Length: 83
Image (cartoon, rainbow, N blue to C red):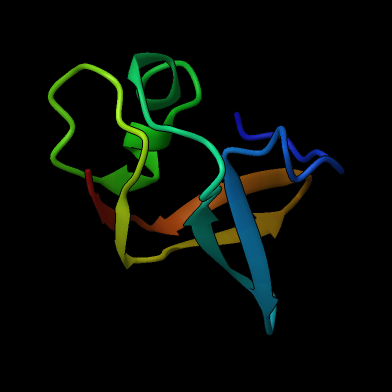
């Protein structure tokens, strides 16, 4: 389950509201590693070339799309990143 936070520093992804469809971007101030990929469920949000280890940077190829309904965030379309 995805959760909201008021802290940009703590967030793994940032959402931009466009007519109730939310575009998701990875937080550029955080790295990408195993806990981010598995525990934070970024593997469910972005297709990537992740194969283990830790990365300090990434390239967003396509944002993910979310919807919020009934108190739940749902991935409508996965995005894509390159590490």
